[in-house]
Amino acid sequence: MNQKMSTAELNAALEKADLNALRMSLLQLTGDPVFSKMETYKQPVWGGVFNVAMVDSKHHDTIKKRALEVLLNPPADVPPPPSFDESKRLMKLYTGDNYSNEYLRLGYEELAFEPHPRNVEWTKRPSDEVLSTYHATVVGCGASGIVIAVLLEHLGIPYTVIERESGVGGTWWVHKYPDCRVDIQSHAYQFKFEKQYPWSEHYPTAPESAKYMNHVVDKYGIRPHLRLATRLLGATWDEESGKWTVRIAGPDGKEEILRSNFVFNATGQFTHPKLPKVEGIQDFKGKIFHSARWDTSYSHKGKRIALVGAGATGVQMVPPLAEEAKSLTIYQRTPQWVVGMPNYREKITAGEHYLSENMPYYWNWLVYANFVKTHGLEHLTIIDQDWIAKGGLISEYNDRSRRYMKSYILEQIGSNEELAKKLIPSYPPMARRVIVDSGWFDSLKRDNVELVTDKILRFTPEGIVSADGQEREFDLVVSATGFAITDYFGDTKIVGRNGKIPAELWAKDGPRAYLSLMLPNFPNFFIFYGPNATATFGGLYTWIECWARYSVTVAKHVIESGLHSAAVTEAGYTAYNEKNDEAQKLNVRGGGKEYSGSYYVNEFGRAATNMPFGGAKYHDMLSNPDFNDFDLR
Image 1 (tube, one colour):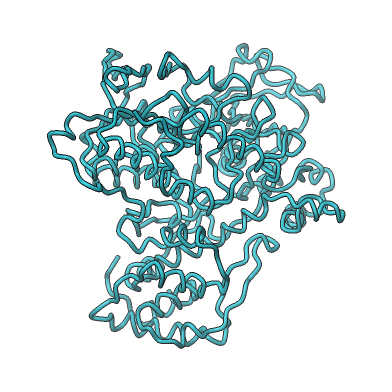
Image 2 (cartoon, one colour; image 1 turned 135 degrees about the vertical axis):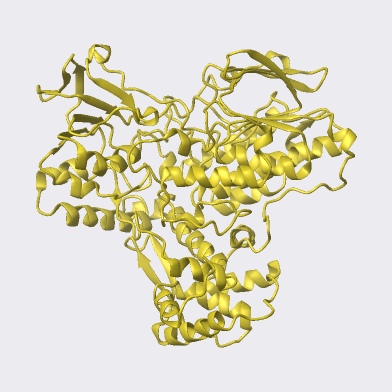
């Protein structure tokens, strides 16, 4: 990709460049104050949900001209990355905004000037002999498991990664439905320690995401520690030894025991598929499978297909199914807020790659630009009681977003009032996940596609009967009905100190955790993508890295201090969750079933999935463990 480009090719690439990111990279390279004095403005996106920092057009030619000079005559010496203090000034200059120190610390890590911004280092490294007496088990080799393993490998702590599937990649290995892909831009959907991967598309497909993870597994030496097709059967804490007795079963089904000081449960939320609980489903004679268990040996071409569920997964697979099916009937229980996304399914050009690879620091500012943009999502989640008192619905931001998203839907479907009633939600944006339009609305206009909003009453041997009294016959039923989100351990039995099990702790109102990671009486045990883990903004990989740094830092503290174990105290757990519950009252994602009814709210009516605190505040909580909240032994 580093092959030289002609002047004409470079000019073409610069026409597509993010000029504000380019301005910042040029400022770092040259130190020329002309770049810091350029005027900027905020370009509203999604009706003002996001405000993208843009450079005034009168400066565009200057930026492109100076960038071309750098590309044609690369500097012999590139200035070193800026310090944190200098980066704070640059971040403020990028948007013209003043930020809290909490936000700036998170933003600095997102800029990823350091090789591994969220690495963990020894204060005083123990001898190899001492380290050899420790062991960690990592359960799952998706994104979370990989990041944990990278940190353990760096520290030299012995570990084993077990993965129940036959391949690496977690959700991106498991999901094989047509056109499964990420709905976050590729340069934001990668680890900050493995940057500038040569993605082929702006929004990567599942196979490409899995390929990236395999690349990381091999590059960082994780493969020798990995055991595929290996299930966790159970784990029991042994107080005397300070270790977990971890029961596993490999491909041959034979049970084996690992003795581990630390257990990192990195199986995630989207692990246990849910099939619809509908009368007669067992009598259906056609083919039926869940979207997460796609049968790649079965050809759906020319078939009569029923798609049950129109959430993020269902909406994403509709266009490819509609193109190849004889007929596609979509059973939708709840409409979704669906919006357009620029560059979705578009290839990344050679020119775009060239700029990222050859303009120093440009990639860093591209990543930061996306991070800043997603910050707008945080405003959408906050319930403004003063705004409501004045006659508003949720907040100025959320109401404005609602108007924009509604207008987008109406623009896509035209004057079809009947379809509009089926497609425009009654709940506010962000109460459920906002979904990317991957061709959803265009597909609904096809002659071979039908949208049914009547409740499914029962299955028959030939098909499905809905509340409108009609029986529709199908060859294939695809269930896109989601997952048992709060079933973190499935049928795996985890037994902590004094025989405690998570079900006892969670009996009152469902799963909870301290910082989404730890439970009292479960020493040296960490849950990734746990209860209330989903933050208000920032990419998932950002938070995985933060969880991993925090958890491995706790493990490091146990080893360096010669301790036996570390667990959150019941007082620390309770106090944290009381703050969580209070914050949820002001968050649209935690506003109860009158707002949601989705997987955001559990069967007890409690918001159990999303983090109510601001992203910068949550990051600050995760930056350094507060051992005052710990039972250290």
